[in-house]
Length: 45
Image: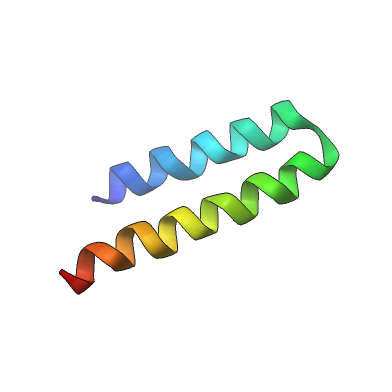
């Protein structure tokens, strides 16, 4: 599970770097939402 979270974080960091200055903030926000809802949702089941 930890490796999957690390891969997701690195993917969104890479995406943010590719998008540019505002893209870093956007990718960070999307990454946090994915980790929060995706992995917290897995705990609710």
